[in-house]
Image (cartoon, rainbow, N blue to C red; front, side):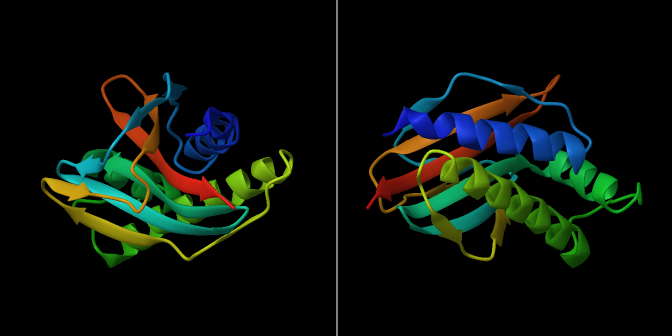
Length: 154
């Protein structure tokens, strides 16, 4: 797995979490794993084509997703993750990936992204096409958001 991808994804994610979600996150050390496991979380899934082919799965705890959606909608209280709240969270994922695409271009990698999809549930395990997933954890006081990158270079 190419650890050079950590920088572009870390920068874009941290910036968008702060600007759009109004959540300050610290980047932890990236590591490799075999699958993505969602435990009562929300997963934003975005496909990549171009210089990189694969998927990025943003793993967000449900409660953090509610905070982000609320902040994105002007502080409106969010009790459940309804369609509007999920749409807001998907848009944040789209912003992260758009920013990452710009940062990757600076490394000579050109990508296109698919519209984001959202999955939610308990104990969901996702096995991606690639055998390895590059995981970049972001931590606030008690919350962890993971950016899971499963791509191969063309």
